[in-house]
Each structure stands twice: as structure tokens, then as C-alpha cells.
Length: 194
Picture 1 (cartoon, rainbow, N blue to C red):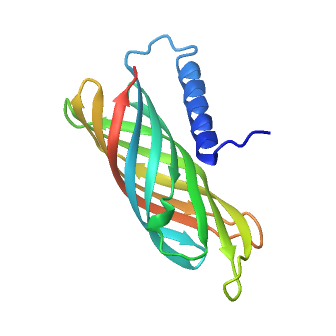
Picture 2: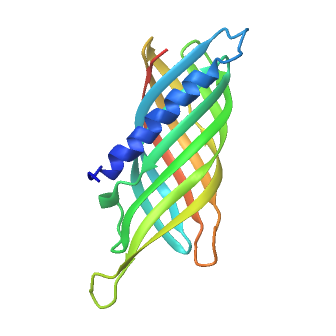
């Protein structure tokens, strides 16, 4: 079996999910007046990245897609941690995948503030070494629920400047598992597809 880079696999899953949401979004809709599909990326700072009792801060680079029908908005967001930004000898890799749904409050012609409730999971891999040895690698996952507030400013008809603040509370899935909590602020660009 050929080697496929994990980031490429994750991006493929994200694109497939966006295509599914797009095709299902207008199924059976007769009175749809305003449909928007946007894809984008943002850079985030996570001052809250807690794994059990281990408290860290890190940078994230997210890929996200928004589907808005009138004022109802849905989002899918994949956020890997920029590993080099994390001060930890044991942390190997981490990411989060969340889906959210909410309402977009129109403040002005160019400004809106979507507020969404979401769910998903964070994934982490870490190594435990003894006396400088290679050590064993462990994986953990934490289901999460949370809140996103994501103001947008329309730059032109095809691009929005998007800010965000989100907090996701994690839960343990097994006795040896730990909860992963994530709090993040971010800024990025969204490009309108339709």
C-alpha cells in the first residue's frame, strides 16, 4: 500500500465532507433565498490547550468551510496544532475536528457575527521516554462540545476577513484517557464559492 501523508488524508476527508454538506444543503429547500458557501483558513493562538493536568499554549492553522442559508450557518473546521509552537518534549502531534451550527447576526451591510454551538473531538499523540530513550508513543481522543463566536467583515464580493473565539470542553473516553480542553482566538480569510 503506498504511503499517503497524514495531512493529505485529513484534507481529503475535509473536502469530501464539504461536498456532502453542499449537496445535501439545498435538498428539499423551496424557499431558500440566500445561500453562501465559503472556504478559508485561519491562524490561531490557543492560550488554553489542556491535556488532563498538563497546561500548554500553541499556535493552530485551521482549514474551515461555512455553509449559510439565510441567517442559519453551519461550519466544519479542522485545526492541527503547529507542533513547533508547543513547548513540550513529549507532544508529537495534535489536531481537532469540529462541526458547528448557529445563527449569523447581521450588524451592517458588511459585518456579521455568527454565534455557533459545536461538537467534535481533539486527537493527540505523545511519547513517554525514560532517561532519554526513544520511549513509547500513545494516542488519545477527547470528545468535545463548545461555543464559537466568529465576527466577519466583507472585504469584497468574494472575500471576508474572519475573526474567531472558541472554547471546547473535552471529556474522557476511557479510564486511562484524559480530557482535552481547547480555547482559541484566530484571524483569517474566507473565500466565497457560491
